[in-house]
Amino acid sequence: MGIVTPFPTPSKATQIGFERLELTRILDLYGRMVAAGHWRDYAIDLGKDAAVFAAFRRAAERPEFRIEKRPSLRNKQGMWALIGEAGVVLKRGHELGPVLAPIERRFMKLVED
Image (cartoon, rainbow, N blue to C red; front, top):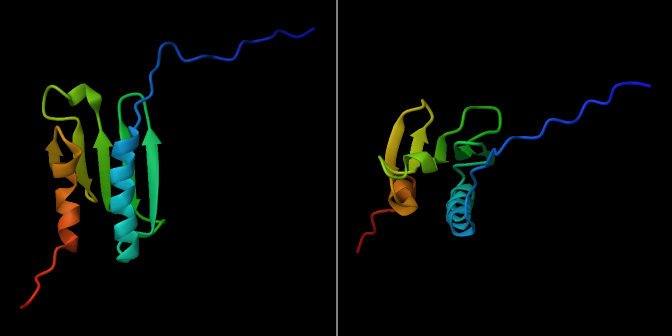
């Protein structure tokens, strides 16, 4: 008979994810950007140290924006970060709303009287 090798199990590895309200807010923004014709695809990466939501203009290119949640930075510079296409951190903070503000400004338009 052959030797049975046990399947490796992760040792106390926790996965970082988005809470329901956080994901609802992010997907609401994504839906508005799709309706406006800016975004066409998204990806979610849930890892050991961060949860990332990436929004793409087209599926075959780099993400236009990445929204990262890193709880290890909660007490330092804030666990939320908005990262641009070139990998530059555009906004960082403790709350999700202000971090998403630069994207939401795209919908603000000057209204004439």
